Image: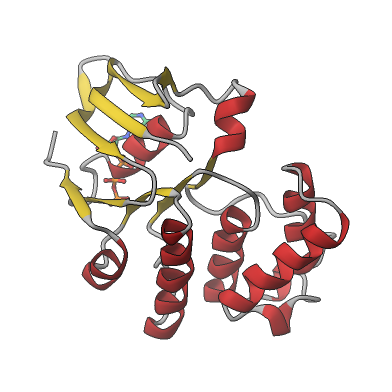
Length: 210
Ligand SMILES: Nc1ncnc2c1ncn2[C@@H]1O[C@H](COP(=O)(O)OP(=O)(O)OP(=O)(O)O)[C@@H](O)[C@H]1O
């Protein structure tokens, strides 16, 4: 399992500050909630922790090494869902999840089992043979969350997973994330939902307006 840390990370473009300096640690088996108003830098912080964006100042470390999306170790260890992924139109929901699970090392029946279990946990197993263009916006959101949960990871990063979900589905996502925390994953979740944060995260960082 992995230890994720941020030391005074900030992001600026030209003279504009997108993310003011922030520091925290997310030990294995814990979850950090990232809160703050629209535009306060939550998504920017999550992109930085996923290695998609370099900090202007400070460092984000995964097990003591700077997070770099080009490193296979970081890509294997970190599963991030920031916005909707690019879905394959020609694959069913179940096939998409098996494809992702297989890419990250789950093979054959293990990949099938992972896709089954993830879909059941999120209440979308009955939809497994549908195509993405046949889903409601909430069902699409659940599939997006499933793409992050179906693969192996030590660190899970989710940006507003509650988007488009009713209260029942939001609780299903919370329960699925709690199971990952219980097995030792480090979780960072940006959210506008006080209920989701209360049911998942032990610690909170609140970003101010830059
Ligand atoms: N590529 C970019 N170039 C310039 N500014 C950007 C860029 N991406 C984001 N920003 C700005 O950076 C700031 C932080 O944006 P970010 O998306 O991280 O906020 P957020 O807290 O996730 O907001 P929300 O709650 O609305 O999702 C905002 O002021 C935004 O306009």
